[in-house]
Image (cartoon, rainbow, N blue to C red; front, side, top):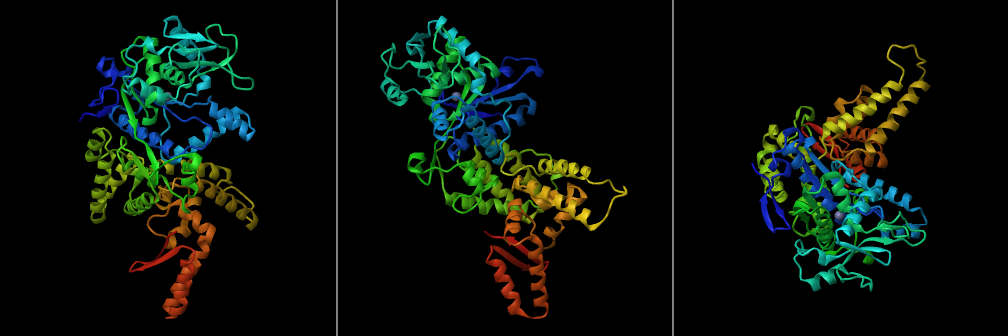
Length: 550
Ligand SMILES: [Zn+2]
């Protein structure tokens, strides 16, 4: 089976063959190389920023599956030098470095919560000034760039086939670039490679003998970082369609001119725009939603990895996507069904790989709507035949819609082992007074809370608990008593905040007792009391279970 990708440069869907394979490099040396433009770290990433991160995470997962986990090199840069960063730092009254570090940590945390694998490299622009300067010097030497009033500018007419990617007429390009009409430019299309810094702005020694220290333009960053990590020509360059012009067009101009290559990347892959409730997202009018808001509370509800990724992948990456509350609610309904269907899956025994139908959908230019269509069919069959739940679970984890419960369990095991080590070893003479036992129990519970709060809600607490230490197992016992098949950490946190699991169990027992004694009014009042805090009690032949319905 052959991967086909749509290449924006040639406007064609073509067979994807990595360069190293085509060149027939020795097996062990072959790598698939992908570069994706990353965030400019000055504020929380919004859901539009999350789209390329998720789309290219799916492509990364697919490439790893096709070529081997250690064969794919995925670079996503961090832009930590930019006018917006300087402005934001001044506005907040913090050091630039402090702002970029903090924003990067927030970004990393947010995209991890969306189930994205870390890229192979996340280079920061400020750590690649030297290769940027080297490229700039080379471009000047070759006549592709020139110095004017302490700026270095790329001379667009020096590249006869400039504009191949966006294929726009020159006047449209000029308007789109919103280029500064500076008198020192030889051509209005010429763009900045380096510019002098004002006092107080980040600055490095300038190239080409320019006296005033300065800083790089945005486009040269990506050319330099891609070069350092992936070489002069590589397989895939990705990003949002909004970056096609001028950013990607200028990356191509710089890299191809510097290295005399026919292409910068053999495939240019662009994801479509994202709108919010049918409107363009714009901070200026308050029509924006950040990843952090979704994860911590948007429209009064907390949204998780499965819901956000489901909605993101239900539209083909190249199409415009409308992000709506209605869409998220639909995603919640569907993914919570899938969580229930897969709750009993023995995740330890499952080798995560895509079903043939999922694979063939993804091989066709990452057709995720088609893949999701198949998941629906798979889920329908799995309801009737529980053995098929394994395949559904495996597909969901492969697509990153669910977290891999085995990996989550491994992490928890690690922490719980550490806690157990700190406890007095079994058989050792210890002071077994109530005070000491209470102390250790409290510490365990505190640890458990921390783990849960950092734990992905798509992982099932109950099915994962079996791999945990015996002390942890004990702490989860009350949750199993009347708990449903699938309990997410979010549910546990909710119950802990609203009523506490011990108290909930006590109320359920009281109700069962009241029913046994035919005191139905009392039983009903307990049900509605619990219902008023968003917990529904379900009675069936097997007994009574609770369910969180926020
Ligand atoms: Zn870039």
